Image 1 (tube, rainbow, N blue to C red):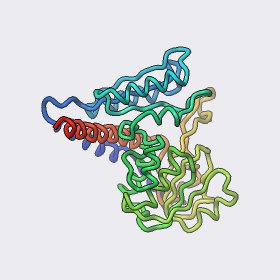
Image 2 (cartoon, rainbow, N blue to C red; image 1 turned 180 degrees about the vertical axis):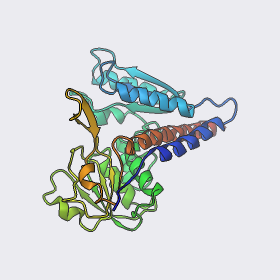
Image 3 (cartoon, helix red, strand yellow; image 1 turned 90 degrees about the vertical axis):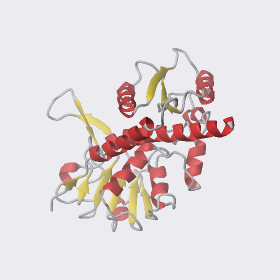
Image 4 (cartoon, rainbow, N blue to C red; image 1 turned 120 degrees about the horizontal axis):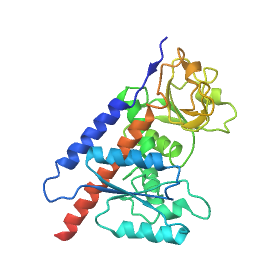
Length: 300
């Protein structure tokens, strides 16, 4: 059995085309969406992601800027700046890069944003709305995993699926999207994680598996049912065996072990990543639409 590769590019291209059409079709006199990414400075490990966000924003017609916290800035300074961005009508979407070091409290900080501007969908209000099945934004990576499953017609609707991972930013939101009514999937979801004692038993009987643990090599043919489809959200950096001193990106799945065993598998990189960025841009456009509509209503 050949294991199909589920590439994210065609899905990302379609999402970006839709976002671009929405922005360009807004008509004259309407400012385009604006995204601000707040981070810890030029030495932040997120510089790569910031550059990718900037390119993605430009591709769909968004204005983008990144804001580095001033050296020595503390939690109160971050809260004050996020509150300012939340009140700024020219800003439609705000991202706070995380994790943050102590004494910063990421969830308290992102809580300074109204749910429309919290486009990463990780604030308390957005997560609460997701539990209530009335989401405004859900984490882009969770939406990306779901978009891949739908695009490739994987067995998820009304099916038993497994989500391996329970983080607030991926695993738990993804399980809620899969099980809830809002997306119309109605899956029966098992949530496993790094401390699940018998992962093979947890995965048994599932034809679609979503893994987002960040544990290289976790999924092999010893635990994955034959023919199952694996959407690999995990991302880790490991030494490159072909080039000493360098590293490569890998997921949770052992691709070599699953080749010829799994029905299909998302590659890392090239699978969930491109779709995540496109979903993030789509959330920015959605925020812009919601806030622009509210401003128009209030101006009447």
